[in-house]
Length: 466
Image (tube, rainbow, N blue to C red; front, side, top):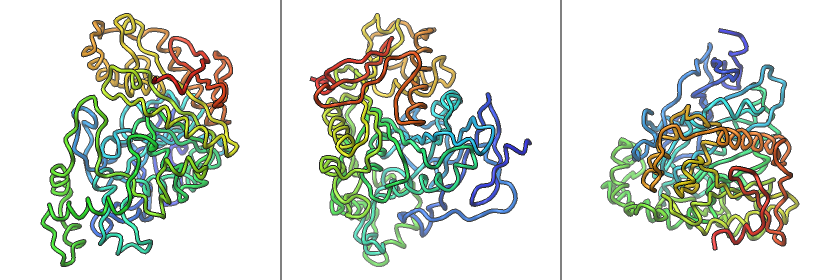
């Protein structure tokens, strides 16, 4: 094994491997396993190890009720606080921009191990890419009066977001060893991942840990909007009752249960999900006065967010339908986010994504929820298999061609998207050689980048969903 594939981080030495000129380090622990007495506690430091730890296999992922095909092939475990680093750097002093991916799936599903966001192509545009796992759903967001009483800060819940903060702190301490620049970190995410990005922009605990942000098809200013801590605590009380936990040492009792029992009881509390409608979640970010002083919506509207250069993206099919998720309310929420960062002296950029394979467009197909991910991560040839699920949805919408449907236009759009994302991470400006200058958003001009077969500046971002 080459010496350059053995890296020293704060907790010990790790060994990765190289694939297509990108070094990959998988399953790196960024916090201690949140198991036993650490269930429903803030993440704790990793214990150091002797020798060289092999980091060539993906870690377990957070407990969740698996939707068909979403996280197939991964083992579920509470021991899930691990991340993956993909770097094109040949030397540790290259100071490349860092892109930190926060996966979708609301706050209750998904993982950082998926093939599409661990693809090699985005790093080849000159950025270190970090993908990560964290606690989800009831394991990551449960609050309860007994947990709040136990906490030195008098709060509970929000463990998911504390995990994200712990990962960003790990990056600050360690990413330079991978050729990344800890002073140039961009957080980006899609759907629930976009909401996670907006919570990081809302929390004083995350201030200074990142320097740019991208929200794709998600924000906590719409859909996942946070709830008062007392509401989440009440949900916790109901869950404890469902589990048969009595008032005598309730935390010892509930921490001794297997997580499968907790997931089973939680399913009885969760409202049923209606396909095509906005899901209802009982576990959400808690407005606790500490991690979140107020709702993300109020924090942005009051100009108190962690303002950094920001790109917001929505897919056309999410606004107008048809699609698996229609959410026109995301556009006014995005406008509020842009106005907030601009008022604090940072640049904001708006985007509507409407690229679909040309043969699908002829059948009337539009850009549905999550389709842009195949372009952002360079899957323009279906090498990761992600297009299989999208093709199935396209078939339901009347698309006839589901075989060889990708062409040079898809490759061009994908390569350009990756160039834009990497350049934005590098200097805060979304640019690429083949496109005209991406105008900064201003309420008066209402300009945005429209991504279709070409990249074109248009006006009327705030009115796209009307």
